[in-house]
Image (cartoon, rainbow, N blue to C red):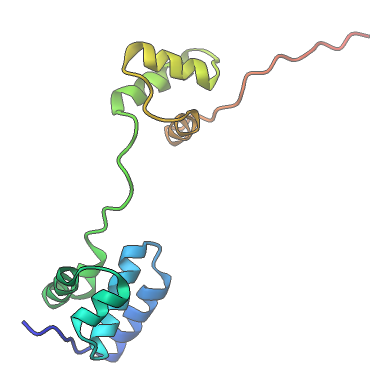
Length: 146
């Protein structure tokens, strides 16, 4: 299979916009690599300049010939795996809904039922927020006396 590609004007413009504006860095890199390939650079030069392996460049070419721009957009599985299991999240949500607790107490309830918490309290707060629970610290208010 040829390692160079020929782009039409709309494809070139789309790849330029993809290389500049896509939110994921790996997709931007793919767009940049294909634009460089269309300009006539050799795959080895592109790999050295972008900082990826030669095999990756050839994979991009194969994907381009197989499914075009859609193939480049697929395959992004970025991000790390969730720190908490679904059972741990369910326990945290149930504890938060049952009574007014601090994040540390919610974490303690999760640790009592499961293994030690594999994340920080901030991650726990973000997880609860994604589950539809907003967390505010319980405060004691002083009564005003006249």
